[in-house]
Length: 179
Image 1 (cartoon, rainbow, N blue to C red):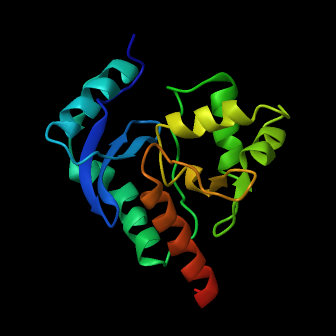
Image 2: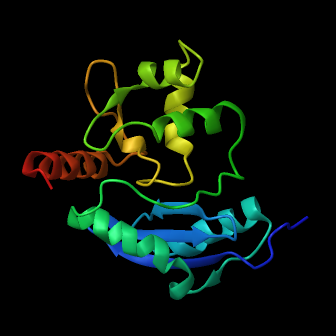
């Protein structure tokens, strides 16, 4: 059963780390995914989102502008925190709890998977935190890039450690510049 008043809306927005698929619902930002470069990536991602939301997203740049504007500000180094309602309907249980804990990691800082597990109320659930970060439907805004291994190495970030390094370096530069 579809409990949304309107169909979800989407746009594909350029970022320094690739094209981002942004999907919003009446509840808020539901998906933000930096797409793979291969042909058909947008269609494949939209099909998965349609299954998860039980609704077909419609292309509407204006409907996603409240997200893409803040995303542009983040990449420009003028925004340290996002003021966006989040639609977490596709995640539940520990995954949701872990992602909510990830949202508490301050801009420009990092926390280990172990520290996030403790913050989420499940000490020792390091791997489950890693799984939650890998499966987050909302990247960047839910700052899974700020979660690192206990030895300080950054990890794979969904097979794209270069994206994670870019985001961490961006935040470090902004903090160092005192912006």
